[in-house]
Length: 257
Image (cartoon, rainbow, N blue to C red; front, side, top):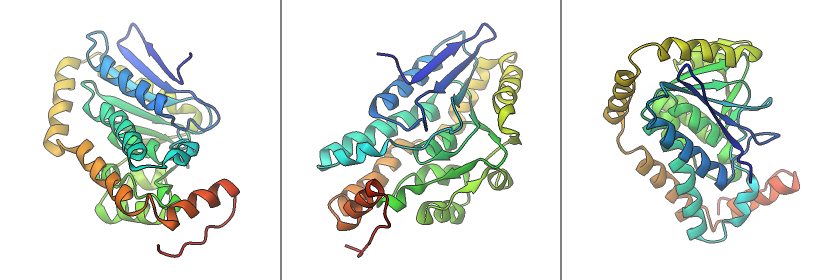
């Protein structure tokens, strides 16, 4: 079976991990597992200095494949799904090599979580970043947004589902550089090339201690957040209504229960 996560390791010590599941690179459980395996493996390789996370097509990532939400019929299934997602995001955060996110198109939900834990972001002009899960009755991704944004901006995105453009996130220091969409990959490779010729062993160690000093409990915090969904939303009318309305392409009718 061909993976939707493509890995390439070049002679210049730059590795690329590419999301490749048309049309929106929406994540399945298998993709999360494959992504985690890729980053943990690449982080241990002496012939890899820096990793670029990128995506094929016009959209970087649309978040979770929403068909997975139909399987949330028990707390156990929701817990397994959350842990699978959390492990994938943590694999980027914990990776022993610097990771550059090359964001050429819309970056939503778990895609935003992955972008937030990259060490550097290059984004296309006008590209939207968002945390739309609240519209589906799911409190999510706040702990990742909080890593890179002031608390009130992270809350604004997570509580309202409102996306922000790359230019806005650049003003908050989240995105390093904004370039035309067709130049994102090349710009990321130029940046990666500068890092690959340096003492990349030391750079990797430096990254690890930056992240440990900032937050050594990122995956635990994500699961605390996800259990709030399991405790208060999984069996609620509003969650079931949100998913039904999304599938039926209609406006949901929430009642607060």
